[in-house]
Length: 386
Image 1: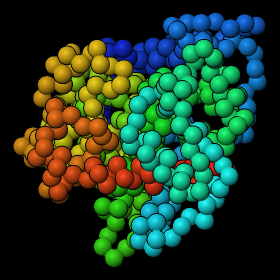
Image 2 (image 1 turned 45 degrees about the vertical axis):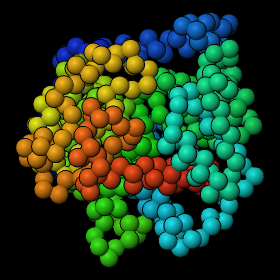
Image 3 (image 1 turned 180 degrees about the vertical axis):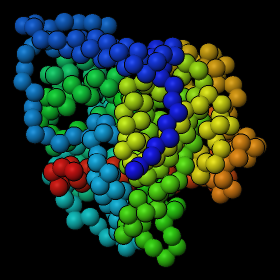
């Protein structure tokens, strides 16, 4: 019988609760969010956003990648191997893609700034022979002057796919509900699935045995039983890691300051995933506990976009969470530990002796954003689904 070690603290709105209470509170929050898109015969404007309240039927049968739950273990493995194959064909063999997206356009609807995601997506589309149309916050403000429903119906009628980088996750859910073309989540406040695909591809490359090719080797065979330690904020990156790692047999331990734990409902889902796949999921508040026996160490920004006003408080709350070589080694991480960071990085999160060391693979990880996004686009727009 599969066993899973689960040590977790559930927190909603910064207050520690029992799992049942947290789930009830999270459900209430979700219900309130859903009510902001209630149905009635007219439109409303709340918090400078325009919400459609018309009773318009949802579009069905269109494949999307909105959360990490949209990928089964096999689909996850296939995407990683496909990304490795595209990278091998382009960089080693110098082969063109055959332009399967010739004559097709993909819209990049980005309400938040981006470096890696935008460059990765535009170059991926170009490699496949398609056209990328960038729609930034100054071009198209989601929910401002036009409802998300109307924006989705208009844009999806003229393009073949949408890459959406939004604020609230409810925004991309609404876009997908009414879109006639596939939508890929390029980041929301709750999930960042394409980032974790790049992380797993990078680890797959690093742990593939010498003499084997990553594109012909199953990720589950290279990543199984590895332990990833997260030290930092309980944010969208951590949410996606918690949901995806069990699918390839990886364990995850995490340390967050009190009040900065991951979302209670997502943690609950991650707990179920860990139980199903027989992996460990452990939550701590002391970085040393999370780092013990770690094979891979990961952190991220302490101050995400939209949290700039919290900077002073967050810097104080994360005291003791800076990753240094001394902290990692004194905590008992495995001798050959490796480091990842989704970027951009600030020195308060991790020191130069870690970030620029041979143990750090952050730039390989950044490049792999292109190949994993390319694999997702190919799967959804060319193969028409996962």
